Image (cartoon, rainbow, N blue to C red; front, side, top):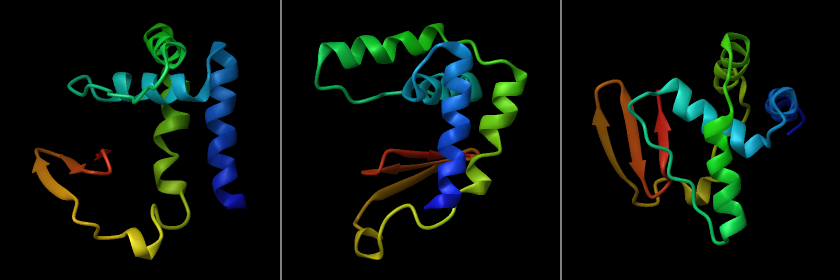
Amino acid sequence: MAANQKLVDTVKAVARRHGATPAQVALAWVLTEAQDAVAIPGSKRRAYLDDNLEALNVRLNAEDMTDLNRLASMAVGERYPPAMEGGGAVAAETGNRYWTRGTRRLQR
């Protein structure tokens, strides 16, 4: 857990530089990294939707992208506990991307 806190700290640092939230940085990263991807964040309240839309105003620079792109290889531990692995998710491979429906995970 402590090792992954460094990842969180990096995202928060990028967010502070842009006057944004970590969630906005995550959405901005998806939109910047994969021009052919569409981010579909879930929102129960209008305020959260408005907050997510503000990610469109976050302009990540080359330094931000370098910092954020290296994070995936630094994550420690499994994404889900063993009991949740193989939960019947449907997977499809397209080009160099891998979608898993059910977990809504996009990997490069």
